[in-house]
Image (cartoon, rainbow, N blue to C red):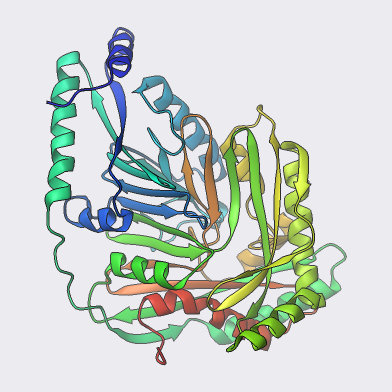
Amino acid sequence: MVELPVGLVAQVEELLTKQEKVLVSWVTKIESLNPLMIFKQGKGVYSTKRFFWQNPSKKVTLVGLGSTNQFCSNKGITSYQGVHEFNQQLKKQTATNQKRRATGALLFGGFDFDPERGESKEWQDFQSAFFYLPTYLVTVLSEETYLTINFYVDSQTDLHQKANEFFGKWEELLEEQIVPKAAKAVVTNKTELATTEWIQAVDETVELIKQSTTLQKVVLSRQLLVEHDSVVDVEDVLERLMMTQQNSYFFVLENKEKAFIGATPEQLLAAENQHYYSACVAGSAPRGKTKAEDQVIGEALLKDHKNTHEHHLVVEMISETLRTLTMDLNVSGNPTLLKNRDIQHLFVTVEGKRQATVPFLMAVKAMHPTPALGGLPRNEALAVIREKEPYHRGFYGAPIGWLNQDDEGEFAVAIRSALLMEKQSILFAGCGLVAGSKSAEELIETRIKFQPMLRALGGLDHE
């Protein structure tokens, strides 16, 4: 028989006098465990309803199993408001003993990059926004680990019965042996989609920028289709990403038979302790084969006019947007280098005290897309993307992350990512075009950006 906190039981009693059912969000500290192992353990019972999240500092790791409630919308840009209202409504129904950040009745999910683009078969299960409240949430905060169990009750008797039932299932989950994974899915074919058309689109877009008095930057992306001889094991891909990509957010969002997965270096917006935090990541160069070569390439990136101009546009836009949402805005200074295994970027951080009048998700909406994934001016760049890109980006390049009932959370920009669809995977990569861009160089850059995910899928021939 589990013993619930007295205060939590009292909250349930009070709420049941006002409403027919209560969302119980029971948080308890547990012994340290491996979050990746828990994600793997959930494959059987909770397959297709799991998420994984870890920030680059590894101070917050989240694993969600099962779905107690969810939000799925095809209402375009109003989906941000929809998720906010959904979260606020959940809060009114919730009894919780949550006291630690990233625990309790937390929502995890993402938004469509451009909901005005129309529907897409590949992304129809996610629509314009897809978030869910997990039944089980494991939160690792540095050295502490917490378990949240979210469930609905309609009476005091129901409360104790379900608490015992769900905690019992959790203990069973921990005791289960991980099913030995099948042989690794072998890559049978790789196809860069519409490469000739993409090169032409790049040349045309650069010419548009040169001739325009307003258009300064456009980000064009493309796809790589990878085919496998068997169903791809998402746990295996995640594990290899975590082994090979430092300085990254790791994420997985499952729904039905699809999984969106990535290792992105780019933070969009975090809300914590009444502050907003963001990062400006743009400009790219490959890593060197030796430490000396890598240093030379990095120093050249810091001085390269095309890349520093591209990065400056991102810093300007993010700073201008955050000034409308914060007070006492602080930009970290001159760009530094953010290095991952295959690529390095120019990097600057921005933070400020948030204005309480703007809900967190409305601030996320205001930030997306930054010039790092859209362009500048935003609406003009988006119009070019709709014209030049022959596919729907879906959640690629869009906000993905979590929020809690205290209107705090964190969203990253979903790049270095792939949509896994059983025996097929679609990989995404983009590049920022300015007046000095050359299509041949941009093609090479996108191929470098495909590499992290391609490596995790086992699709790099030389590795």
